Amino acid sequence: MKKINFASDNYAGVHPEVMQAIWSANEGPSIAYGGDAITAAAIQQFKHHLGNHAETFFVFNGTGANVSALCAMTQSHEAVICAEKAHIQVDECGAPEKIAGCKLLLVPAIHGKITAEGIQSQLQRIGDQHHVQARVISISQSTEYGTVYTLDELRKLSAFAKAHNLYLHMDGARLANAAVSLQTDLKTIVEAAGVDVLSFGGTKNGMMMGEAVVFLNPLLAKSFLYIRKQNMQLASKMRFISAQFQALLSNNLWLNNARHANAMAQHMAQGLKKIKSIQITQPVDANAIFAIMPTALIEKLHTRYHFHIWDEHLSEVRLMTSFDTRIEEIDDFIRDAAQ
Ligand SMILES: Cc1ncc(COP(=O)(O)O)c(C=O)c1O
Image (cartoon, rainbow, N blue to C red; front, side, top):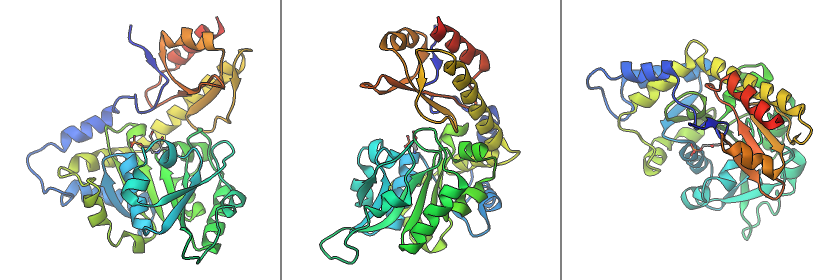
């Protein structure tokens, strides 16, 4: 029997409207490397959602988006401040250090979120030629723990960044889920945080592949055409990535997909809360649930469901929902867990 997916939104398939867009883009030849009409239209869509000044570049994946963004934001003696469990720190195999060539300065996070106070502790020896110079704050919205920074928290981080002459990078692999959670639009979030460069996710929200690096600070975009190529993130048949974004950003598909994923996470959380031996460990703001469960229960559930053990020592698991999660799958999981 095929296992049911609560492992990751990356396990999900491709949304039919996205697949249709890829199919429709396949009409004969078209200019390569982003010179095509579909790419131009998709770039316009980003302007519509994030403001006319937004400069967008499509890339293959999230790691490529983050690392290329950091390349554009730092020099080799500069550092990026991020949460100790940020994707760029724990899940990118050292690519920021190798490719962007910059040091990551880690800040403890509560439920995946960092604060100005935490960041302050890493702001040391500014102007000292012996010491790496902090240049960027990188945050994930939503976070790796399925939590979402409030607009107020983002405004505080933005004010801090500006006061200390730091750029702000947002890993928005799941920005759509954050927007649903905050009941607001993408632009409001990005403006609240004073984002300079955004990695915007498509893959986790119904695309086959592709992410976007969006510059809200156009000065930083100056060399990005070359950085993207050097980082091997320039797609020759770019129209097939662009077409997916066009579909995602039209007709509120991005919103509806994320809305569904978040609603499924809420349904899961409500069900799990009723089971005494299960303890939810993080606020469920977006599309992930973190929970401590008895090891024997994890083993049993693993025979029918895919999900990740997040922390072996704590017996903490991560359950993730996506645009294609079905409510019956969750009900089955809750029933099996309760039994
Ligand atoms: C917070 C976050 N950022 C970025 C990514 C993108 O990574 P990838 O390179 O696998 O597309 C992920 C994927 O899991 C993620 O969770």
